[in-house]
Amino acid sequence: MADNAWWGVFTFELQQQRCWRIGERAIILKRLENEWNSWNLETPNENNDAIIVDDIEQYSALDEAKFGRYLQQYTADKVQVLPLLADRSVVARPDTPLTLLAGEKSRLYVSTPIWFSAQLLPKGERLLDLPFWRPSDSWFGPSTRVGQICYAKYTAARIQLNNIEKRPHRAITPITVINNHDKPLTIERINVPVTLLHLFADAEHQLWTTEISVHRERDSDNVELNLAKHAPAEALAAVLINSPRTNTEHGRLIRSISSLFA
Amino acid sequence: MAGSFAVLVVYLHRKRATVTEFIAFIDLLKASHLYALIQATLLFIIGFIIARLLSSAIVNLVKHKMTAHGQLFLKRTIFYGILILVSISALDNIGIDLSILVGAAGIFTVALGFASQTSASNLISGLFLMIERPFSITDVIRVNDITGEVISIDLLSVKLRTFDNLFVRIPNESMIKSAVTTLTKYPIRRADLKIGIAYKEDIEQVRSILMAIATKNLICLEEPAPIFILTGFGSSSVDIQFSVWSRRENFLAMKNEMYMEIKKTFDQQGIEIPFPHVSLYAGSATTPFPMSSVPNKAEQSDK
Image 1 (cartoon, rainbow over the protein chains, first blue to last red):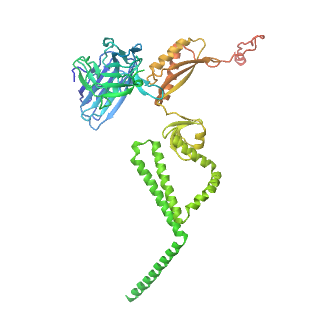
Image 2 (cartoon, rainbow over the protein chains, first blue to last red):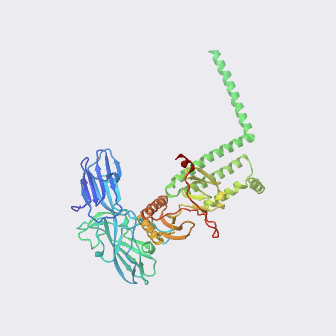
Image 3 (spheres, helix red, strand yellow):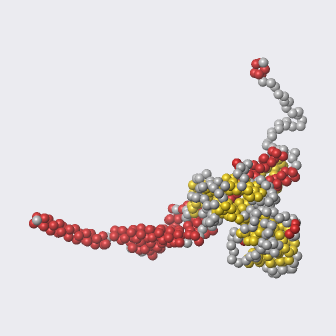
């Protein structure tokens, strides 16, 4: 794992506690002889500070945190902490609706929130799977009868990579849209299937996902979705951090256009 | 020794006599209708048990591939199918000619139809309900102000468990006749929050406050977007309907959170939620009733 990263394998002595913190937002894990304790201290607003891992013994405001106890006969000393993508698709919207003209191609960058996962080694039992900031629920589909529940809020979609703010608790997904149809494609919202994407980290610990390319062919209401297996070109010296929540054998999916764009 | 031998001989003789009597009895029984009747009853009972076991076994085999509703339907079909076959064969065994029964069925049906009008109607309605499937087991439905979870759909009635944990049996006939609302059909639901604000308030400000509350609430859906409707000028308030969406599992929680947050924010922002005021008015020609506050006489005398 990368040095100074907030993820990786952490060794806990008995009674030792560690805290992953972004400003006031904190997730604390403590090892006891027969149980693991966790404290989840949430804050209402997103903070863009770096994620700090420390061993602070006394932590104020622990009473307000959500407390969890995980029992084991004997606790082992190793915990694997990893970033994970959201557990549902995420909807992002550009600042203003975009229209991709007929026969054109464009590349968008979408940033989506990251979850914190902690697993016990060697068996891999999951202790925690929490978002740093839970995005709000949303619905994506052609009608209120047909569609899927997904997340919105704390997302951004930009055309220029420089315009997207790099944050430690967000991952960037490059999306290439190719419109081979004879009509323009209007993009008000994009549904990003993050549960199918791999997660990478570049040399600066910025998180990236695999690249998605969307092909809209002539005379078809369906779009072809291609998921790459490798890190995007923008992520320099990228290392694979975590695999997708849902494994797909094929990197090529056919979806109806209304399930991706609105 | 000789004595005991004699006893044994007598015993065996008697025994033979008993066996002969028994065989004679069986022959008599065979000749009578009773034997056929017992045979038919046994056939029916064994058939019943087989139908039970077989239907359960088949449903167990395909359990993971079917919904609770489908399982129940399959189980019933197999059970009643076997039972009907067994009954026909049992009747045949007694010696009842089924062709006569079929002939008599016309008259019989008319008689039975009159006698069991309600049950027959429920039965037919039950079949339609099973085919039409407006809801299935574990769905939450509302029928004539009764809301509850469907626990079984039977031939004569549908059984519900209400949220205050009561068992309600609704005849199928009334299910067919009245409007049935399935609350768990679609994944998302809309809550219409009725809010009244004082006439002095800035409606545009109230609108933006409500939208901000909806955006802040995580279980309130972003899309479909909340709808702000000014429903009219009420007797004491400007009436607003604020419609917000949530996942159906979160419906009640979201409604509660929204109402609580609205009250809290309105209090903080000084927006008045009025309640009905009664003003007495005696017409324009007459002057209003003179009113003044008079100190209590008892209090005055104390002083």
